[in-house]
Image (cartoon, rainbow, N blue to C red; front, side, top):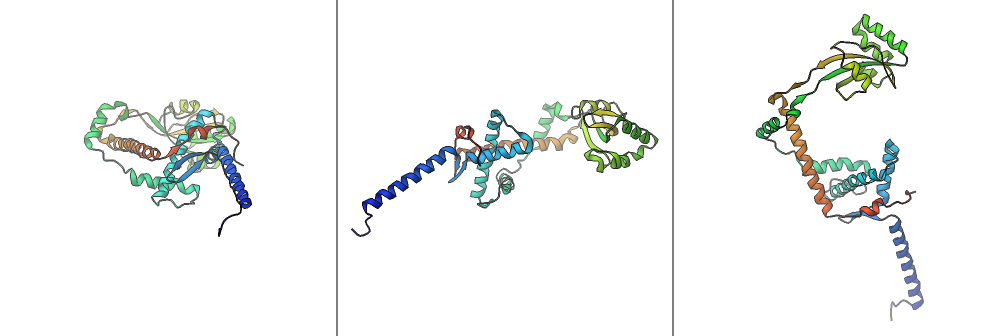
Length: 280
C-alpha cells in the first residue's frame, strides 16, 4: 500500500508519542493550569512569580492566609488582562507592566461613572451624620535632627525668628520633607505617631514645639494652621458625598463585571495553593 508506515517504524513513532505525552503530563503536574479563559491559560508558576515579586518588595514571607487572599486578586487581574486582549486593548505578548493600564482602560470603558442625583445626595447627608463631620486637624512642618542638643539649638533659633523655620528645615533637617521646608501635610488625630500627635495637638496655630524624641531622632514641630472639628453644611458636603457615592457604585459595578468574566473561566484554587518548589 502506497504511503503505509512499516510496523517497526509505527512502533517507534507510537513510543515517541507516548513519551511526549508522559513528559507533558509530568510538567502539568508540576505546574498546573490555575485559570483558563477564552483559550488562554495561567499557570501556578505565574502566581508564584507574582508572590515572589511581592516578597521581594518587602511583603514576605507570606502566610498561607495571605497567599489565599492574594490569589483572588491575582486571578481577577489575569482574567481582566485576558478580557482586555480579547477586546484589542492589550497586544498579545505585551509586557507585564502594560497590563494594569490596559485593565484600567477596560474598566473605564465598561464601568463608566454612574449618575448621582441631588435627592440621593441630600438623603445620604441626612442619614450619615458622621460622614458630614470634619475632624480636628493640624497642618505641620518639622525639623528632624540627630541629637537633643541640635534640637534645642534649632528651637532657640526659631524662637528668635519664626520665619527662619523653613530655611533651617531645608539646611539642617534629616527628614524626607526637608526640601519642602519641612512641610509634612495635614493630619487628623490618630494619623501621627503618639509622641508627635501629643505635641502637635497641644500647640496653637503658629506654635513651635519643644524637642520631641522618636526612633528617628529629635523633632521640632511647627503648627502652620489648625482646623477645629465641625459639621459641614449640605452645600459644603455635596461634592464629597457625590464622590463617595460614585466611587461606591463604580466598585459594585466593577465587581459584577469581574464576576461575569470569571463565570466564563475555569479556576483551580486548590492547584494554585498546593505547595511546590519555586520556579527556577
